Amino acid sequence: MANLKTIRADLAKLTAERERVVAAVLPADQLEAKLRAHLAELAKPIDDFIGNCAHVLNGADPYHVTPGSPHMLARAAFGLSLTPERIEALVQAAKTRAAASDAGQMRLTDTEKAERLADLATRLYLVGLEEQAALGEEQQRPDVNGAALLLIPLEVAVEHELL
Image (cartoon, rainbow, N blue to C red; front, side, top):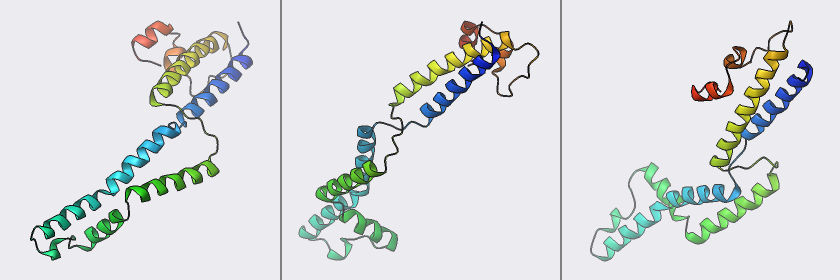
């Protein structure tokens, strides 16, 4: 059995690792896809505008080509600037700027993140059980898992979602 100082050092390392995993962002390709979807949504006014222009060519009044309210005019003006070429240029510029300011944060898919967090929860719980066995007269940590405090076996804690 390890001594309490070693156990608490292990707990600190695992807790720090869990914090890094929690702070992880999605991989760059998934974030780029998210950005492209957002820009495509913002570009929708150009499709509406082209449709309205087609109505003018079919005899509709040209005054109905653009939306009437200032809010919608601003949305239309912004959307009209987001041509496929402009979107590509924006994405490339954003990628360049993001690469320059990248702090090297951990990148994980949602699945990878969930798996790592589950593994860390199990490992923290097992070390927490070790801590309880070695505690003796020492002060209890304020953030100890209640199930570990009661020395509930891992399988039971998992079954009852206590991790």
